[in-house]
Image (cartoon, rainbow, N blue to C red; front, side, top):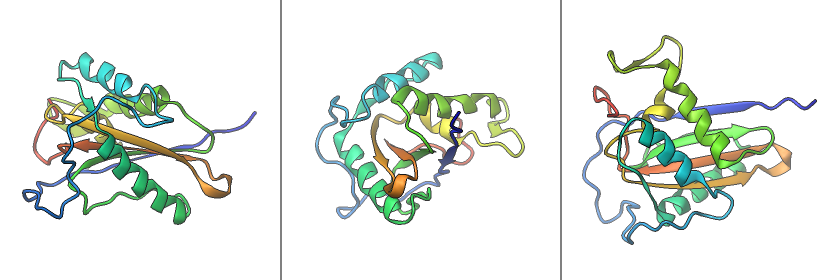
Length: 174
């Protein structure tokens, strides 16, 4: 039996200045054509969002390209998960020692709901819930995702990029 390890990282975003002409903000309209290899990721996101009555996301291929470029760089660094804190976008990262499908990845982020307390707008002590809150952030409109097999058989890494970003301190996701 092969053991599978999964690591998750979330990014807590602080308010960002208005984008400038040099920010990597997509200019093309969002599309619903998912990147190869991540089929079903939009439906998985929207199923979770529907459960808390927030608007569905649109798939954005420009955001998928942002995700693909970032995880390509991570692969070059040993596939260690690290967020792009200079990015104006929200991010969810996922790593597994095996392979995963879209439903497994999004479900892992959704599973953090048990550690999120809406009344206090906080995570349980010593727990993460930022993947979940980004997933259901009500003002996020678009998502783009990518996955990559890590070099040297070091597993698989997934990234979804969200615009506008969520996880603003002091604000509830919905």
